[in-house]
Image (cartoon, rainbow, N blue to C red; front, top):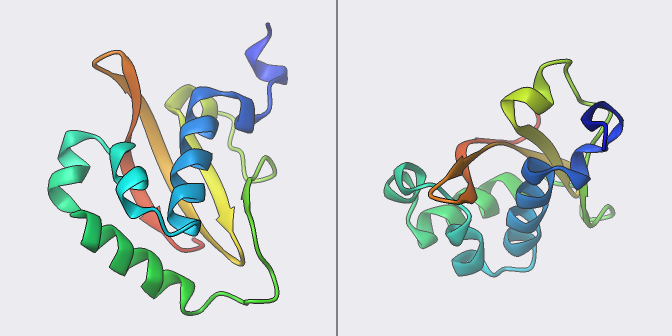
Length: 114
């Protein structure tokens, strides 16, 4: 398949970004934590992840709900670098995903809309 025509949500970084954001959104912070690289796991405990997420969501508009991998925020080199912009309600996380130890994990995480 031609990667250039694939949507981010169907690529590994989109899939991992979505699963991570969905777990956070559903309040399953332990499940979300599994998607982090070792380095990020050291940076964020499960509780730390929850706190960061809740802080970000405190400014979200409750009228909008759901988790969506955005395709209109792509950069030409975005897929090559393996990053995805995932909207959560009116906020977002930006994740960089790499293949480590045979699994795709989040190696970089930014909170909130840029």
